[in-house]
Length: 103
Image (cartoon, rainbow, N blue to C red; front, side):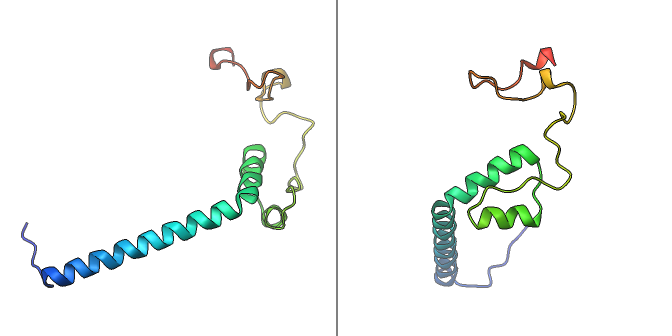
C-alpha cells in the first residue's frame, strides 16, 4: 500500500511533538488525580472485591471518604456459592481460600 504525504516533514514533526506533549500532560494529570485520591481508590478496590459491583450510593459514599454501605440485597450471613468452609474467606495466616484442586 502506498501512503500519500499531505504535510511537510516539519509539519508532521510539529504534530508529533504536540501529540506527545498532550499525552504526557494528561498522563501526569491522571497520575496526580489517582495519587491525591489514593484513599478513595483503595476504598473502591476493596468494595469491588467484596461486592463485585457498586451502585451510585456506594460510589457517593466512597467519594465523600466513607466506607461504602452494602447493597440493599446484600446478605453477609450466607455464602454466595458453595458452603462457608470452602469460601474465599481469609484465613488467620493471611492466605485466601484453599488450593483450586480442593474446591
